[in-house]
Amino acid sequence: EAQVTQNPRYLITVTGKKLTVTCSQNMNHEYMSWYRQDPGLGLRQIYYSMNVEVTDKGDVPEGYKVSRKEKRNFPLILESPSPNQTSLYFCASSRDISDPRGAGELFFGEGSRLTVL
Amino acid sequence: GEDVEQSLFLSVREGDSSVINCTYTDSSSTYLYWYKQEPGAGLQLLTYIFSNMDMKQDQRLTVLLNKKDKHLSLRIADTQTGDSAIYFCAESTGTASKLTFGTGTRLQVTL
Image (cartoon, rainbow over all chains, first blue to last red; front, side):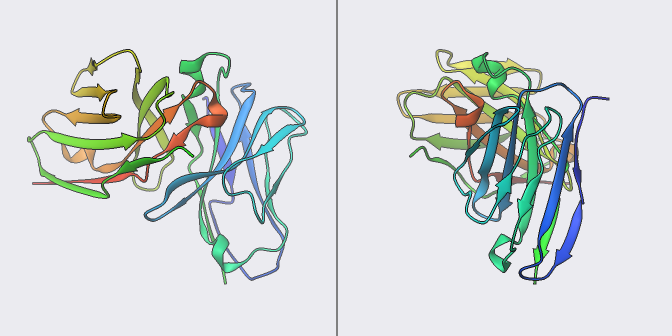
């Protein structure tokens, strides 16, 4: 089954304790992206990756890191989480970024709800 | 930068039509999308429209685009309880890295 898998789905942590949210897709997609969803703000892009070893900042990258060592995986790293990073996080991938129609057809994971105390 | 706005909440009765509206600011948008987010799940693409089209119909869904006013709407005919979800519009200038989402509209369907 084609899917984007995120782990963990739920996490409560404390300020300053490093954590990683993993994301894996089995569709051989080149493009992957992380978003955070907050009430009244919709989805905001954190980082994205056009291919292996190619990453770039989105709209709200502060406090986050990413890496893309393999095509299928795109982990999101919070080196020193703070309470304002409490949010619902989504990983997404896209099948064909060279096709403008395909570029907007994102496949999303089920989300990771993070609470930072 | 680009901005996409939606009203936050809409309540309709089962069987009625729902109309969810969206406005955007980027006149160079090439594709506009509607995504659906069911409770506890990620977003799923519902439908999309190319910017040179005025309307697109797909079963119970009708998308209307007024490019002059930069206004996009999604009409759901015969709304069912299973349509209860958050609906996001999104606009793209042609690359995945430039996809901008709206704030989302929560559709509540009542019996």
